[in-house]
Amino acid sequence: MRRLPQPYSACGGLAFKQLQPIVVAVGAVAVAAALMPVLPAGIPVLAAARLANLLTVALLSALVVVQSFGSTRGFEVDARLPAVVVAAVLFALRAPFILVIIAAALVAAAIRAFL
Image (cartoon, rainbow, N blue to C red; front, side, top):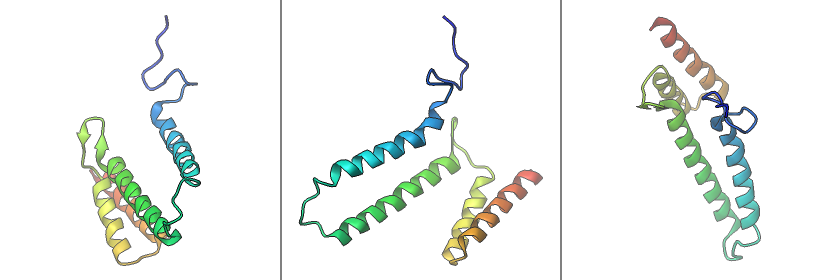
């Protein structure tokens, strides 16, 4: 029996990390569709919308932390940390989103170029 190369799996050559966003998106849509008819009538629509917004922020924050500092060896600090700090400061100053992205990318690129 022939073994597949390490980053590939038996599902068409896609690694599991490439499939994760698709699986999560499909799961989120399935959960939302399943809960729509089950939600009690007593829950105000605004409260449900606020809860959905808070969950979105929490999940996105967790994703940023895992993708920014996680690695196969555990917690890792590299050029991404100063870029995230710059982005957080610019967001706190209410800078336009495109400016935040460009500034964070430039900081990360400069650190990688000089280190």
